Structure formats: C-alpha cells, structure tokens
Image (tube, rainbow, N blue to C red; front, top):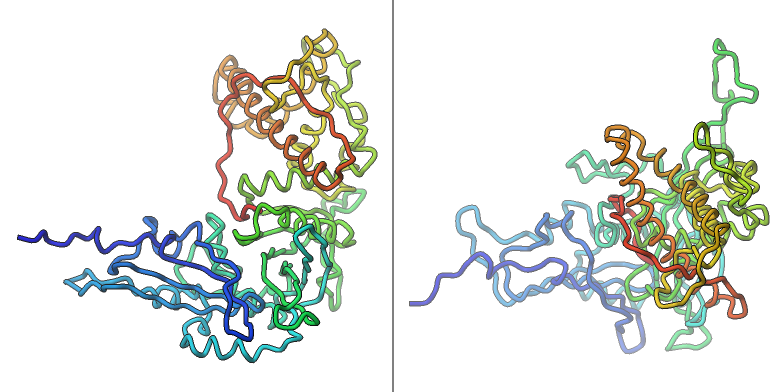
Length: 483
C-alpha cells in the first residue's frame, strides 16, 4: 500500500524557490546579466519562510537591468488540491495584496519582453547625475532624486521588495510597522532623497551607446534639527518657527541613512564603500545638515561605516593628532581627568565632522588603540612576535582601557547599577575583551582598504595577541545590508 502524502512533501523554502535575475535587452532578445536569491522571506511568507502547496516550485522574478521593471512568473510540476482549510499559498495574491510588487510585475511575459524592445537607447536613470566613480572593474554613476519626483517614486516602488529580501527587520518607506495594512503613507515624500548606483558600460549592440545596470541604492531622510538659543532663552520665553512660508529644504536638519542595499552579484568589490562615501561627503558639505546618522545598522554595515568614518576623520588634522596622554596619573579616588591629549577639542571636532556622538567616540577609540605601542596593541596578527611591554607601554594601555570602560559604563549604566560591584567589574572586563577583538578586526579591514586604494601608503600594524575575548553585547534589528 502506498504511503499517504505528508504536508512536508508540499512545502518549499521560499528563499530557494525565488530566483531573482537582472536581464538586459539586446538585438537577440533579453540576456541574463546576474542571478541571485533573496536572503530573507519571513516578512512576506511567514516566520518559517515556507510556501505550501507545490512540488518543484520555481518563482522567477526578472528585472530589466536598467529601469528595474519587474516581471513575476511561477512554475511547478504539481499543485496540491485543497482539502478542508488546507490549500496552496496564493503566491501572486500575497505579493500583490501586500503591495510588495507593483501591478506591472504581474502582466504577461510577452508584454514584459515586448516593452523591452521599446526602451530608448538614450535612457538614463531618474533624478540627476550626482557623481561618476571610476573603479578597476568599470565605471559607476550615482544618480540622486527626491521621492516626490514621480520617476524616482516609480523606481523606488519597483525596488522596495529588496528591503525585506535583504534587510532583516526592514520595512518599506511609509509603512507603519504596527499596522497590518499594506497601504503606504508617502505624505512626507519630499523629505526623502534616494541615491541610485548604476554600472555604466558600452552597449553590446552599439559601442557608441551606453547601457546601465542597476547595482544598489540608499534612501535618506531629513529630520528637523532643533538648535537651542545661545545663550539659553528665559524659562518664560516661547520658541516658535519663523512666521511666513518656509522652504523646508533650507531648515537645519539631522540627516539619517535609512536603507542601504548593494545587490549580491556586486558585493565584495568595494562599491558599497564608494556609495557610502559619496553620500556622506555630500551631506558633510550640505550646509543645512548638522549631523549624519544611520538607522539601526547591522554588523556588516557597521564595519563598512567604521572603516569609511575612520578614513574620513583622519583627514582632519586635529583628530589625527589625538593620542592617549601618557602624562596622566590616575587618582585612586575622585573624578578621572582628561585621558586624551587634545581631548578638550573633541566635541568641536565631532561637530565639524557631523558624526553622531556614539559613532564618533567608537571610531575615536579605534584610532587611539591603533596608536598604542606595538607591545600592547591588540591585533589580529596572532603569530607575530612582539616585544615585551615597558612600564610606560602598560600605562598607555591602561589609559586606553579606561577610556573604553568609561563609555561602556555610561552606555550600560542602568544594567550595571543593578549588579554587585565585583560582578560589574568582571562584566566590563569581558566586554572590553570583545571590544578589543572587534576593533582589531576593523583596523585590519581599514589597513586593507587603505592599501587597496593607496598602494604606497603605510599603516602601522598592531601586534599584541588577543587573549580570550568576553561576550559581545549587541543585538540589533538591521536595516542596512552588507556591501
């Protein structure tokens, strides 16, 4: 007697079943440029990331590589016949009703292919050309536009499914995370700026013309930045916006990088760092921006950001000259004195850099650690021989550790205040070990990046072996993808 079919036989892993491809029009038809799978699908198909009711399920999501017009096609060898409440997942219904894809994605394949023949050979991305980047593997262009522009909005709508596909916990612009509604509120579209990254190459059909391939994008949001009056106003005074019509673009703002995605086929080439630097440099020069922040970055983007921010900050002479002050004597009681030589200028340097406080002081700690003597400097070079530390070397190491512990204590004060002093010291030491390991890894990545971009430059190697590192602390919802 044949075995009865089980539910597991009709389950397909959504991430494996969905095949995303970039295709480019040519005289011989659509040519495949790149193929990849999503990283996450739980926000669309449920926590188990499974689709029920099909055997040999294949979901093809094709994108035209330039304007990113999508087309969805599903195929399977067998479909489950509904039994009671058990019925196959309505794949098109899920994607359409959840507004994960625009309606144009669900037209016939022949319509998608025919429309590709009608694209103008002079097509360019929406928005305005922001900058051109020359790289070993070719030329890239960054195009910048406002979400209130219909062409920019259309492209963002086509791309937005990449947010849940590649950003853990990511949500669409205008989506209310607390609501089950798929409707998007874009009433603040004029406060969103989108940077599109394209690779530009000679057309295979006509070398005199160029072809664009979409690589990635980033979205930026502007918050109003309140500046308290100097000197502070009287408690009886009232603060009001200036009267009359206001151009919001001229008001002081805090600029936040919200989403950042480089498609998998283009990762590992340094293009993510180039896009981040382009965006940061733009807002650093932007008079209305007083601070540049990032929304809930994941660990991979944190690394990219740390390397780029350290490279930028070291172009500021006052920052590059900062060191731990070897002449400081640590008192047995009372307040700890300033431990950084030139530390009285830290806040003015941070304001000049327009980097948020927590990020600035983390990067400062990396910089200070890199300047420690070789004998006490944490390093990823575990097999290198290092000299024995002198008393002066050990003193500098202790000063640096105190700087880090001060920040860790402030950041975790509420938690640490609830445990006994001895346990508190132990927890700080464990976390310090994790910070040393993390910074050594990032500084090694920084050195590789510098050597890649400037072959003649030399960056000092840290050489002290790391002992056992304590548990690391962070657990964040990521909104930014690896580059």
